[in-house]
Length: 358
Image 1 (tube, rainbow, N blue to C red):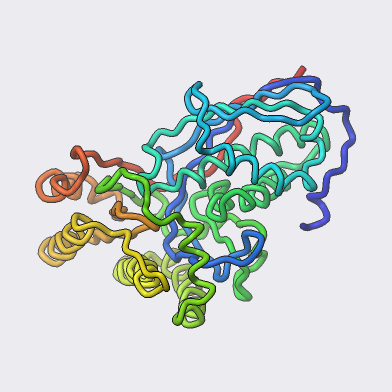
Image 2 (cartoon, rainbow, N blue to C red):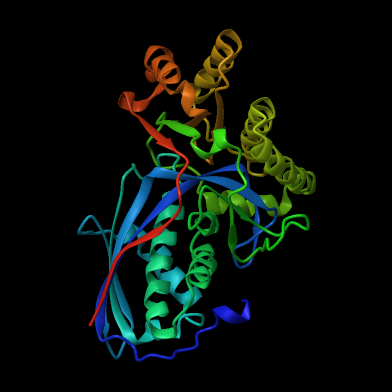
């Protein structure tokens, strides 16, 4: 951990308070797949930060002799997530020793369905981390830059991709020798985007809202002995450099080619691991075929990407929004569970909504 992010109190701990944070999900353009202990990526990644798909989290805290926490989703206790939250607090305790003095209540809600192919762990852990570091800023006088940097560092210990959700319109996580300040332990903001990409659209087709049969954590672990892992890590390293240049110069043709290749390569790694698995559904493949045909016939620069799931992220410039939505309603909605899809666009990162101390 870099020295300026170490805990260095200059003010007394607040007796109690509450902090509300809104943090977005993100969609990786160059994927990371595979990690080392603890939460270190085996290759760098770059993502678009989303806007409407976000998590809103309120953390209430009060002084206590013993640390404890409660976790609720929309006011209701959710036991399923307790082990993940508990593991997160254990990982960050040495970096945030002041937490041992509090009893904490966490109440969170998403604007999108859980397990919908939108990274709820990314938005969720980044929201919790930013709230925690907002409290730390009250105690230490952190600068705004250092606050977000430490929040990204902590987020990574809950979910790797969460480190990228702090920043917008794009973020880079993972060490790359040609990317200044890049780091495996936290993400950095990437704002050198062509005008077209600053308002880029992401419409998510909810093809399967069910829980994935294989968790992302298990999938990452399978890269340790994957026969093609070295080639994949090298490919991603090169693709990151290429994507940075594409986002800068606005080359949509190259963006389409590289982002789709990255999505399909991610799933190819899943299909060739041991044991192998398949997260795409029949509707995913059918929708991809339709997208390719539509792009060829209309000359509209519509492309797709996928996370580790079945749901398709359709990416396109804002100028084509209505034509793409008409295409979705006419030909793709049949593949969406209950005809559901989400319209989103590139956003600006996490933010503090309110902070009260007593």
